[in-house]
Length: 330
Image (cartoon, rainbow, N blue to C red; front, top):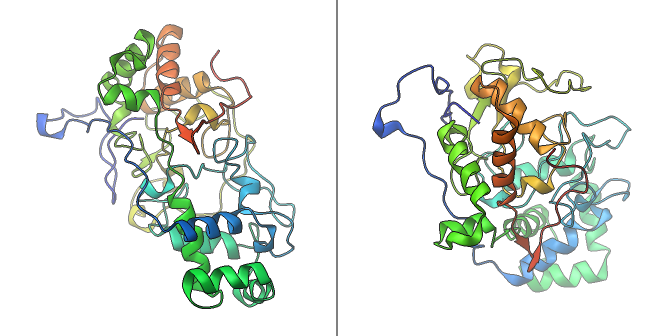
């Protein structure tokens, strides 16, 4: 939550240097509306997203891990992949993904199409390839007709990726209480949430969790002041084999550098952090305060910030996003 991070590097954490007025953390902004998208492409992408045909063994779909009824993710520490190997990272939500510049926990992708293709072909994800997938789509009369009608040609790599990306760009979650507050509806959030919002800004969380996605576009070391396990539940994850982003290669211990996640709908996306180390939103706030701010917050402060974060929950398809069934605040 602390230490403004440029796209190609990391700035000193808040409190370690004086920050000039012109360098103050950017304000949060309302979530922009969904872009104008071709409805036929959105619906075709929706069908593909929910179809296990996209995986090599046709055993699961994109929605198996990105459940749109459960915050755009699944509420487990880390999911299990094709060969029974646990994935390296917690499943990130896909809600508002079109509003992120960097994608994935390591931020290695700036193209949603490239990230989608990586998921399709990764041996521990969908484990598919184009020579296997495209003939399946050609052999399906419904898909054959829909691709011809939508793209004027049979399914090919570009059309499949375009349909999936178009659908993902439609996954916008408007009408969060906090957005209504930013739009001038003062009563949209409670006095306690307003206090949490002020703490969120005053303590520097907004330095990294910034912009309309309340994060999602910067890099940060996880453990600026203290190791990330300080005071929290240690992860059972093995050390990730994936290295950090190439532009961060000169940073010591780059294995602890991650893309700052968006906090949109965070109350619906537990467990938290790249390895799902904690189920509780209040515990996540406490860990971030210790490791990123060098602060030990009072229970009252933790509760206020967690309550504010709950105001970031929006709607999808006209319905409120269901908050995670696991315990949120304590």
